[in-house]
Image (cartoon, one colour):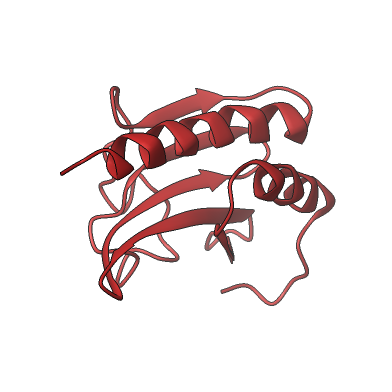
Length: 123
């Protein structure tokens, strides 16, 4: 975890996402070169146990998301590529961004919501 406060674009991104998707968790990191980034996750819980975790990395320039390989037990703090998160369709998300963090939040929120709805329909 990084010791810096969230950056303005991260605060906007999380605020916008939290208005659309409840129960998100936010985690703030930085690469070895000092580049800040954040991870937003959603735990799928049944019977009090976390069964799966969906995650998206956001650094203001890109979104990379998919299923956490370990419910963030060892991959929190690792970018999706380093943690071998599958960011390819249909479950993954890999988008280069340009612009407003509100637009990024809309994309990520829609992606989270689609997964949550699909997961909740499972038997």
